[in-house]
Image 1 (cartoon, rainbow, N blue to C red):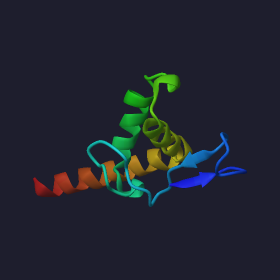
Image 2: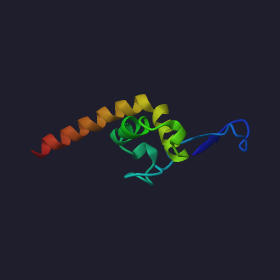
Image 3: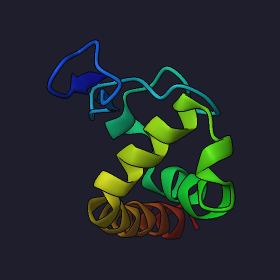
Length: 94
């Protein structure tokens, strides 16, 4: 987790998750963010995080939401790749 801002003790502190930071909660807790399936992160974003008011979100939820928003386009692309790999593996098994 990286802290960005003019002064680390300031109220304007802006914390962000990076790819190597660990997922903080849920099914993939403890895994690097870059290794959490894109479909899972997008599910969080669209079904869980966007439905809740930012005012009521804990810092943990805000950090995850920020990571997803910062990486939204690449996550959408990655989801497509993950799906194609899954589809290819399942077709080969039958």
